[in-house]
Image (cartoon, rainbow, N blue to C red):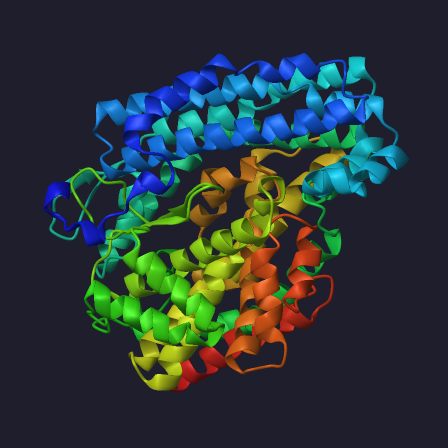
Length: 587
């Protein structure tokens, strides 16, 4: 479908960010002052100059955000359009230049103020917009080294990114997979995208051959990948040592001011829930009608023919009804999003695939969809609107420097919406009950269990290097194989699965994946309390949505009634999964 054949009501209107005709002038104006922050260098010890620097930096950030986001979203409308690609490149380069000119700010603040002085500034009403940034600088001040040592670490960081860059280039450009046959019998070259499609195939032979082709390729390159991953771990340990941390886990958690207890509680809770996971795997085996469940049987739907087949309007109305428990103001915003040019609905020629929510501080949020009449896409609407409403409420309540929220909490609002939709459909009998239960079970299997298994692998690999100085590819494969046996049981493991760790790009952003699991834990607890009408639950959740990045993530979550330093939310999530599996096994 051509984009110009889609009615305007189903396309987003990016004028809220910047009018296309004004982009060039705005770009030139910003480019002329890209180095304007340099006038503050060497003068930040004066609080008045520091405040002026903060304010000007925020203004520059707002302007480049508008230029880049507009350009990228125009590119996503038509990825083949050269003019949009050019705008993205220019905006990205300008952003990098502005960032380089502002790189002196944090080191100079650290050199100019004591911890107590930074705390005093964070409590100064003049610095209220920057209070959290200042308190974080105060908290981390002890981690900074001398100016000379910091310059050395900065140079090392340019080299340290090479492990991730090399893996990215290898994984996206260099690796080659054997050709496989699709469901129609056509011989095709396997890619990462095609692999995901083929793993959903009803033809088990197609899934098996795609699986074998994928993992044989990583097996053949395991020594190279092992060396890259070891280098990445050694990089983490290097920084942890010089920053004074007790290992890479503590360093990475401290980066978002999250207590290590949240990580440990997650692993402990998930391990207790492994029997429920194995029960689901037994149910999955039975529903698929196979004598032995294999790893290539994990992604194919166990319930088919259950799609709601709703028009976009019907799907959106259903989502609004399901989310009505979030209050009249929330529903009014959903209507505004639908009617106000926030959403780009349908797949068109060269449009970016998938779905996301984005926008800028000075605009309302936007949502990109590629809607098809499937139950999955109804959940996608709810999910992306969760992101949009989180951003809208944070931007409305917080000044720009405090509005952006950490990755740690980024997936919670979207998953709350999915779970509220799930509970509504289950209660109202609006969809196939077996489909809904299997949908939730698979959500937990892939997000709660699988991501925690990844988290255990990362921790074990890092601890091996901390204690012994190295880890071999064979040892990494054994760690991963043993974890799969623990989680999935001997019936669902084979030799090739031990190489799966080698294809996970997230491992090069260390201790990241656990956030997916804590996100679903938090969302399960919040959605349960809201759906059941627990006193104060809705009000607490609305406060959570409005806090942006103004406080540490765990403190923000506590506003919504979730304390991840305790076991209760993990137990609530586990109960939800277990109940779904129990009912599914009886149907």
